[in-house]
Amino acid sequence: MNFSSKLLETAVAEFAKLPGIGQKTALRLVLHLLDEDKEEVERFSHAISKLRNEVQFCEACHNISDQAVCEICASPRRNHQLICLVEDTRDVMAIENTSQYNGLYHVLGGLISPMDGVGPSDLNIDSLIERIKNTEVTEVIFAVSATMEGDTTIFYLNKKLKDFPLKISTIARGIAFGGELEYVDEITLGRSIATRVLYESSIK
View 1 (cartoon, helix red, strand yellow):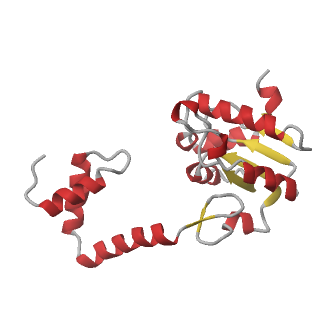
View 2: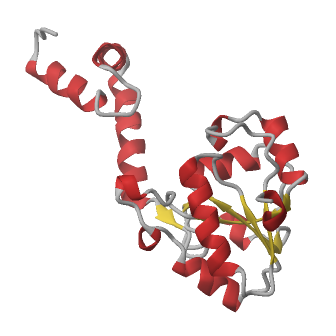
View 3: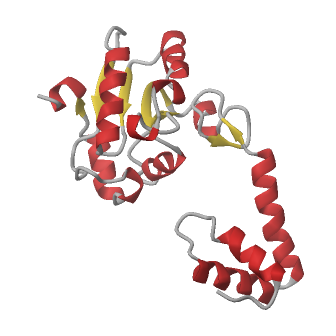
């Protein structure tokens, strides 16, 4: 792609680094910004910069937050005896959109994937164990994508948690194998949480 401006080329190259954005889409976005008022572009730039510099991760559940403890963990209206284990923040948002869950979350920050060099020590597992030891949790729900990595992760976690006095459950498999949680429709995902089953029963 030939550019009439080095500044334009640099901006397009930066946008093209975003996931799912090719050069043509990146060019369209950059040209759109050039058509906007300078004040609009400044607001856009400031929002991204502020996000990167000021965003925090909840010290309890590792969800993205504006404070040290996120609104979900801090809410007295949530069921603090229930923890839903998810891969990342996108899954928290997907489950919250169903309005079928009122407990807390724990964001793992990924899934165990030896092929990609991701092991248990790379995930937020130690903090989960400490959280279970020091709080009133009575049930942990595995709500991760139905993939090989997801199954490997919950198998490992079940072994780590099985000696605790906990109910360990997994979302019902209304979700096809290989499906990413964030792309499942809200009705199916909500029903999968509401009809969750004991983990040991789900693998028989």
